[in-house]
Image (cartoon, rainbow, N blue to C red):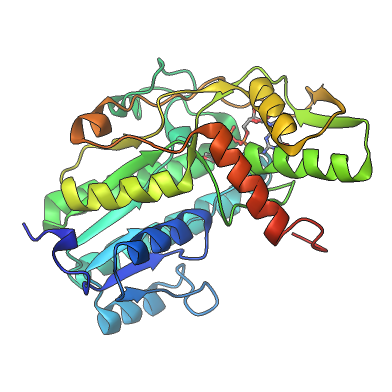
Length: 319
Ligand code: GFB
């Protein structure tokens, strides 16, 4: 089997290179000396356009593909735009996985998510728990699309001999995160809420839900490191969870973010907003047995994300 890192001149396509995950994978590849990277913005190449994708792959002929492009968002976004979440993700996945097969890509990495496991599965979540129970209603369309992507990767491997690998990251955060309060995930939302309350002198910050759900948070640079590690060292149809192996309550996370931002006011919980899945801690035994573990601690990662937010977005007219 040709090793992914055999040649840093390998032609690598990072679909979704501007996003949270895609930009981290590009940073990791460039750090390892990869210079032959192919990237296209969504304006240059609409991944939902089958003909355009086939033409792109047949012309560019990438050797390796990181499929980091997706329609993603937090619990409110998933609950508000279910049709976009299922249509965009199905189209993107079908086009890229199929075109990769037709153009004989050597290996493709597909990203699932911890939120596509059954809502009330035993914890920590083992890879084999997928499809063993009902999904979390607030993001079921997204989860069904992602599960279809996994099944497509595995089916192409079995029928066409492709080398698609599927990974299951936990909740992610880091540079280039989405800080829009309606569509973002909890961690960037709390950074922005506490920062703006501190600047304005607001006495109160509202946190959605009850604060009791538990979440696991992995820095996106750790995820990118794991993706390159698995592209190099892993083959097969089995899923691979990527996480830290630790979780905490949303209320505990809020207290950590509040302290790092330096906000001195109070927190109130808006229980009219959904809690979503009570817990989704990943079992990381498989990836640890392969020789990888996360390195970036949560407090360190949040401090770095706050610094990024201040330098890039705080005070910007709209995000
Ligand atoms: O991060 P989040 O939106 O997504 O919400 P999920 C996590 C928890 O944080 C929920 C609470 O219990 C929210 O109610 N929360 C508290 C907040 N305050 C806020 C806030 O200001 N904004 C947000 N967004 N949440 C997602 C899936 O589930 O997990 C996606 O919907 C994706 O599809 C992602 O897969 C990884 O962790 O609940």
